[in-house]
Length: 346
Image (cartoon, rainbow, N blue to C red; front, side):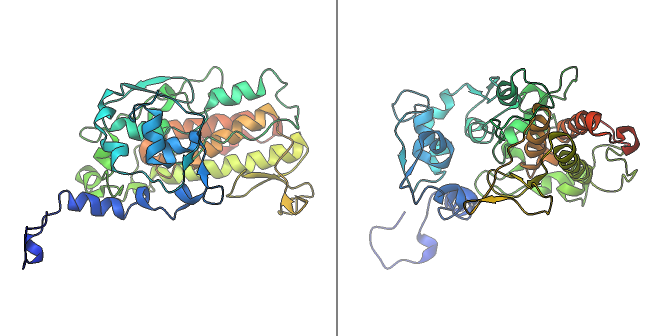
């Protein structure tokens, strides 16, 4: 606080929570110019369903912290909002006892954890895919199908694993639940500085010595068939994700009958009818992939779910590897790929 009168020197000025505010101001949560908050600028308003996580006012409205009825309202929100202080520090947040995930699973939360789980749970789950495909034949293309996007940075969904039922779970398979790391690393804020959002790697180094998070390996076996266990578990996840994308491309061309192309922008999967590696165009726009089969849609969802979380190797490597393995196995059952020869482990 400023003294009543001068002259005064900087060391006499006290700004409460100055370090936390400074960290937040340099974080992605405050970056108004980022795509996360500027995406709707041309529209002049943020749809309520998006504002829940892309505007502080929308978050408070969703949880009823502003005095309104909890839930997604119909009216949009003004542009200009970010994940502000009250998003995580509103006193009413302590009253939020559980968060409903896209799968329908209700997960208990405490305090500020509610903010993390609200906005890092994704927007779709395996149940969304199941509902979309219904009882259609597994390998029959349907031009009405659209890619089901799990959304982005869904760390909470990844962390909960099979318990949260966020990935597509293949019938007859079991899936690892929440990744229970050794104490005291047991919450979002125990790994991430809550204001800067940076990973506190010092905590990792207590047990993993000088290893960077991506270089840490939690198993002595090779999941990707390479036999190399000197690299971090992230290397196995990346390798199997690449194998799954290859299998998706093979299946699309040979079974669905239309080659598929992935590009890192919405809606991500595009038609490439002549297989030249360039998305087909119509009216000057890339053509979204339009030969989805139920089998292909399930595998593509799992691929995107795993690759959309940049910290998947730390949040739940077991769950990620299981989703990739099962998806590759399912596609290979129809493409003729020798799955056993891949040497993958689940």
